[in-house]
Image 1 (cartoon, one colour):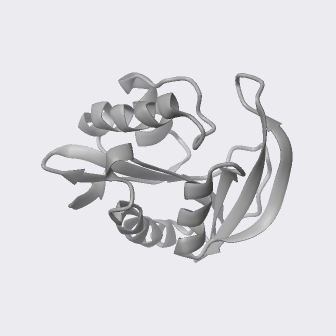
Image 2 (image 1 turned 60 degrees about the vertical axis):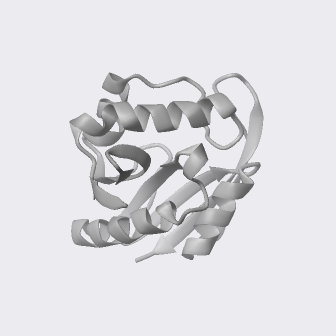
Length: 162
């Protein structure tokens, strides 16, 4: 397994990973499939980027993790960043998320991040378990947040202090 900084040529593989997760449903707030251009703009090179790492094996992207400075809404304290993590459905449970987070922690510290926020759908049991296993702790709950399709779900906010 290779963990590396995401590059433009990783966009097709990252798109395949995320779109499969979106199609399955229930574990991401994303509901609209990505194309490679949107992947590039949203995860690989947005202005708020702190870091984005990919996990690859045999040239195939099996997962990626992104950390970025928050948008103005909702406001967060100085030094806080937000995280998003995605592992290919067929590769779940192989330790890819833990490997990605080791690289993420190093890059986030170097960038001056003090705390990482993970806001997760309350019905995303695997995601809640993953972030909890990394040491993220609950600090807030957002009630009845609508998804793009109108479905309302709570969101659990977890934090990891670097």
